[in-house]
Length: 113
Image (cartoon, rainbow, N blue to C red; front, side, top):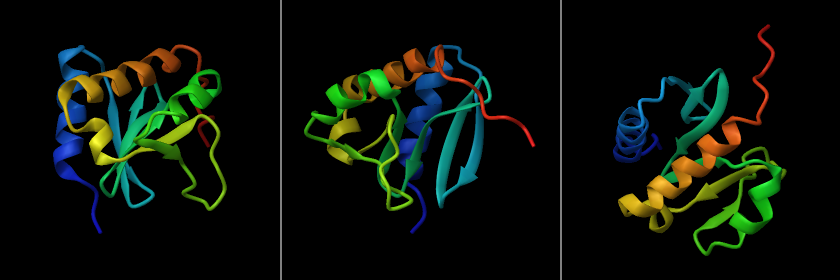
């Protein structure tokens, strides 16, 4: 199954509205959005993939529409999946985008090979 193009468009619009430069990469069967060479947010099937960082992780995991990102069958600390009910309205989507951008200031970029 391909990733949700509607969600991808909404993420692009949210970042463009904030005048944030970003790069898109297709990976893991979905779409990953990089900000400052750091994986930030994306789409896997119908889920929003959010990199929220370790400090906010436990609190945000308690949200009813968030769950552990276990793409590799192991939890990825600092990353969450958010089901469609959690990003359906603009207000909720913008909260997730803002949370990811907030952590972006602290995150380190991956080393280029």
